[in-house]
Image 1 (cartoon, one colour):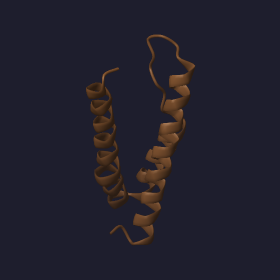
Image 2: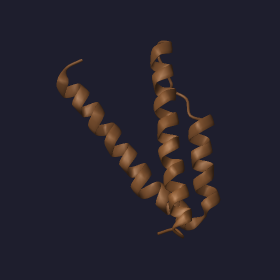
Image 3: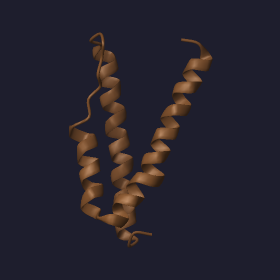
Image 4: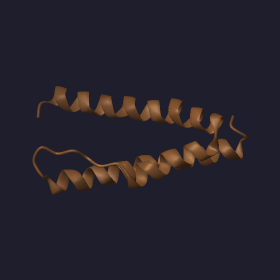
Length: 86
């Protein structure tokens, strides 16, 4: 994989994480904390990777990244709730 492709994947990951953490989570906390909690729970339990060829290493890496993302989202939800949604 070329460096440009790796940088693109890193940028894409950062952009998607920013949308989740800076837009989606605060919006869900503002509309209803239960929705935000449900989002975290769905990330933890219902997310899967679709693979054209089975790749256990990729599956495990993806699960690890999803759990880390869920941890960040959950921390953000808790912080928003403690601060009254601000």
